Image 1 (tube, rainbow, N blue to C red):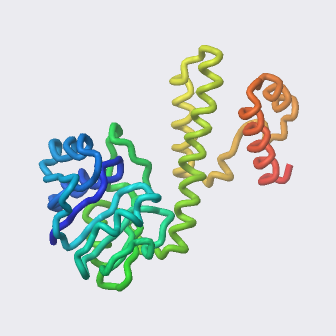
Image 2: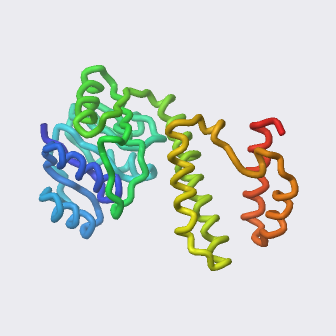
Length: 250
């Protein structure tokens, strides 16, 4: 089976590496960013192009959500299999006379961060059972955690991912603003962050909650609020504390 990966960003880079590690041959990486494509090609020995899309049996579209529809129109081969990697788009976003699918890896990707691909969950969906089995087999060569999931379920998977990853990382950024302003090295907080994440491997998150809000310690909450000079930080602090109080009916 000839496979082409379309895209040159974080997802395209890591999926190219994951396929390559399992000896799944990629015929081409295709995209607009010649420098990024050249870097993938140089590291993994995969041919690349910014102008001529190779004929293939399976195209994997790894671009941002806003570009998926337009990029899908570049594929003119009939009856091939085409999948996007978005967590928030239906397979029907793909426009062409081919078999449509999704191949969603549930992970945050950065080119500079090495990943254990075997631990990344993959959610696959296709128009027919034969293609679902094909995609599931591909994913299982990379990962230990593979599930067939329709679009309705995948929307909730993506929503949960935003809460548990994107929102949490934003809070890290806000926390670092506070520590930086007080010239407290942020690395002192990393053991606390690591323990917080490690704990929920074994304890239900709701049961693992600690802090002044879950204790309804109004004295500390008021002290903290007086320390915060930034309006956005204060709004976040109050909003999350109110959410914690409501969860525990305080």
